[in-house]
Image 1: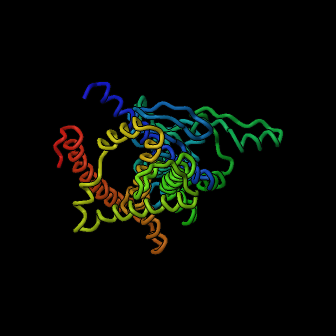
Image 2: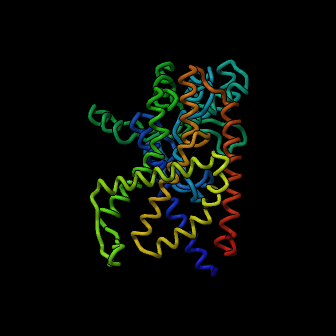
Image 3: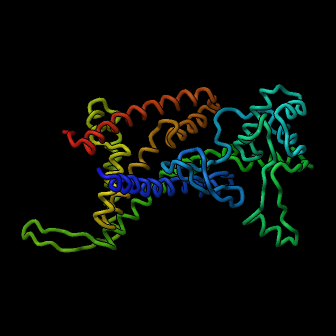
Length: 372
């Protein structure tokens, strides 16, 4: 392949995947914000160096590797909460900028206990963690410029909405109430059904997009139909209801195919018929070259696959997180951080194995052209 062909192929995949990840993470973001949960980052790309703009408490942007994406919903860290969060929060806000050792001394706890509490507060978006330029573990109060509802309320009340600089001391008049307010903006503070909605919102948006795409293709744009008896080809449209039915039929087919991964008799065949990012890149370019309808149809099919795969009950996928939430709900017991990490690593290992196999298939098929 020529260099330009490779660049166009890669660009096609990036465009399609970035869009699908955007709407997927957008589902998590909108659901979280609808329930009052803080979201500190909404990024397109894998975690790493990034560029973006901050709106309220959320930074929107892209990372150096624009494959995948994430919405950092606060309070989703597994395991029990640290018992020293309120004291650590009060210490940092009183100082503005505080060393870990300062917080440990203020709270009368060990350095390790202070570190765990501070890192959890970083995950909450309550304090800002150490920067790369910091020689020691330095924590700061976050810079905050109120926007949206908070600013409107301040203006209606005839007061000026406060703007804080990062690391500025803001002693808490009522630490208990301040901590309660912070906790109320965390994912872990929500009831089970709201947490479940946030988890399934991402895959749900992927499936919803696919249904809407099917309606657009079959009911608005139309498609060519060949009469089997006469051989005549005509351009037709169908009712939105039939288009929706076709969308759900396709979703059912994907569910059945994905279920085949867990059947020893069909797993090998299912994997052989699947594709990795290499195959997605090649097929994305072919779809774009074929025209708008083909590109939309391919994107819809890929969106269904992304949505269904994310619903698999395997951490760290959304479906796996939901299973953990369900287990905690039934057992009335929080799953430990260690247990969640073990399960997540097992899930990552499984999907890494699938990825390697499918990547090899795609290289043989699309690069060397010798896959039978």
